[in-house]
Image (cartoon, rainbow, N blue to C red; front, side, top):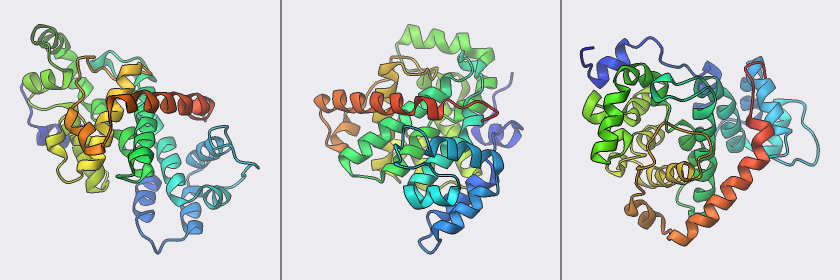
Length: 287
């Protein structure tokens, strides 16, 4: 197989996952302070499958509402626009992230569980450090590995070569990807984000979740996702296909003002959130 450049890969691959149009519009709406909660609820309600999933999550133990909500407009009034955006994006991204990722030897559902645990860890870190909004951190954590969804078909024929470099040179999987393919899943994920017209900050955090120097346009968010990813990998909740040799960059900890002792509390809070969300986010295709 001849090598493609990153730009050629993104241009030629026909399997680039698509977020529902509603999700893309929703991302733009929630960044516009003039948009009303009702307008957001009305938009989400135009997608029946997304509405069903949103209401399932909103009424779950994860949110612990004192009364059930029966419409998206009720949900947005009770939860708020930013929280509903995170919830709806998770529901929308499920179909993309739940698939079997053969090139990384990931059974169906494993990337989704890792992505969700990273999102929750990022949310915990954001609330603790207050360097970025927790909702933005959740979205960035959820989408950080989306590049694997299209890159896996290019990784699969060369998986053994990549893994041999990981083992022999004792380097992270993403570094071996770069050696063999010329780019890694984080770079591909950022390009997907651009195709989706996601905010620059999200694309930057996706690109830099392994290498902080790529995150200069959104250094705080990039640091949050980096630490969240390492925390999630360390707990083995879901699997991302990355080597456990993936290192924690001390610069990210320093930027966030975190100590090693903080990580235990972050892990504890993340695990608690995952337990509370288990029934809500373990959705099926028909959900």
